[in-house]
Image (cartoon, rainbow, N blue to C red; front, side, top):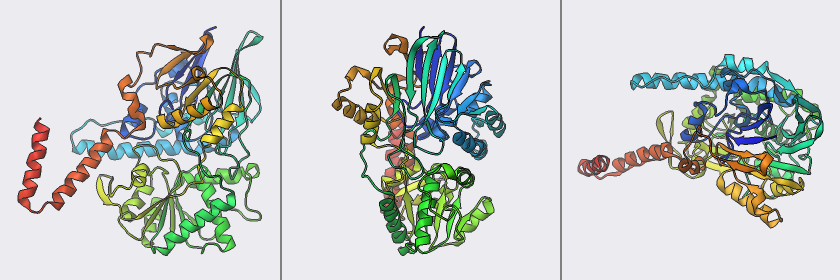
Length: 531
């Protein structure tokens, strides 16, 4: 029986997780994630799926992060009506994340269309609507860790704790054949959490597989091992230094898990007296609602502070309404402002950055992975100027990067997790990683004795025949990017170059000695364009 696996996302980039399996009597997806990063990558969200959503039998979902679940409503909008199997924690989080994503897309498209009308350009439509998100929620089928399900004849699935975020799972699949011994046994890692994460036990998963599809986000980067206490001390030092500067501390917030970890650690520091109880604003409707889900699942979480609700302190101020968010501007210093999104590419954090980046006494604390080309990545590069909402903003604030809050296993932990899954009769596909991450993890696996031919690095829309030794099939005609463009998935694109060029031109003109010199510069630019 031929069984094929297609990689329609998270192949050469850390985004858009989507794996399509086809066998003789059906087909299904593992994950259906939103593409995030540069505008070139985001454009993939608007095109057709490279499969027919209406013909899918079901979806298996690893967790609620948008790069794994964010295109589910588009799947429904294009005709999918099957069940979506996931864990109870993930299902609860999706109740808020999917409607929020739809609202963000509708509001961003409305703002873009206003500009398009002014420029006499074609209007665009949202990737999906709030109605599509509501219909998607009706299809969710919660499955407990360890429970075996048979979503279709010949397919058996089981969810394992991945230790990444609340509800995150690795998914074991067994492809069966009319009661005979299994044809294939696969494991999709999802995103693997680090050892000794604040809220979760260490990742678990079976061994003795045919194929392993494993993330490689930090495949080239080992990180220092920090205890919870050591991490809190690093956070305390960063917050203290920011407050001593006299301005506000901005923390771009990943709404799910990172926000809740930071709240729990800050709660401990406030209650112990290690930090003064300054106002802390959580300015993200999604993060606020996700925090309520964490409170609902508190009994399942580890390392929670004793005798106190870590998500509720008198100095915690949750701002749901836009008017409340705008009122934060009255605080010129001495406050902590956590706002979405974590990569600074959308949401309320962009308004706060616009108001604070130019202030020398402000501090921006980055606490997580920043995809190539995002505002967060540009700030970490040390850019002197950035563009927000079409306007130039000087970067005079202190930009800090705090490690220790990553939800992903590092290079050593990933290599160890993979070797614990051995033996592998087929091979391991390294996904959900930029080229440096995949190459780094590949080198570690080679050093641990895994044969080179068993380590596979699929590109976007590649298809493999798993029933024939992972034989690569010819790239489908519907491949969404030409082969020569695949390398750009993990680099800044021409949109980033264009934005930087406009800033550079303006600065060169501003610094020109006089009008004559400005005229010379403009004529040179004109000649370059004419060529």
